[in-house]
Image (cartoon, rainbow, N blue to C red):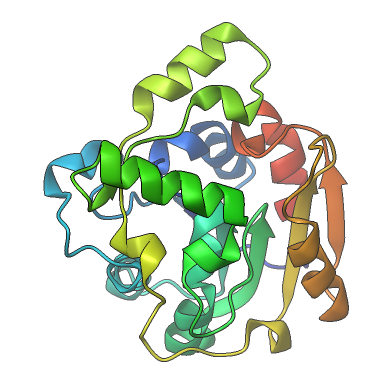
Length: 237
């Protein structure tokens, strides 16, 4: 990402999370002079009261796009974490003239027509669907055990667990249906956690390399914005 770009940064969280997870990263970026926005997707975190079976990945694309359009943001660095990578192709198609780069943080890189359940590991997909069936009334997925994020302390694990909220199954089970662009033809970069074993996002880092994007690695696990915010900020600046 060019250091000449002082445009705004839009940070998009992954499944079960909310804008809260970007607090440290956003604060550091703001202190460096970058206007930063961390929207919470429909039905999640403090918007949990609006969780319905109708919320899809298309809904979440519109959440992000409408924020950027309503504020008339230009020269945006769009940052996608985990599930939010699914939204990338549709956001690029709709917002291309407003974006300068898409930064992918431990994120899926989506192929049009594929839902999140096909982009995550088969084991995880089976676990999510089973949990939705047994605990989520068949249409929402309960948050995963925060222990899977290998957070550095019991205190952080408890804090994260207390803020995770259900994710609509439809957002994982159905692909984005809005018009989409090929993200590999647009400027990007990828940040991979170096301390996960196995590392399920290696295949997406390989896609990034094939696209000619810089691929960086740093320790901190999947929730690096919480465990190693300095590395995330360095990646973005």
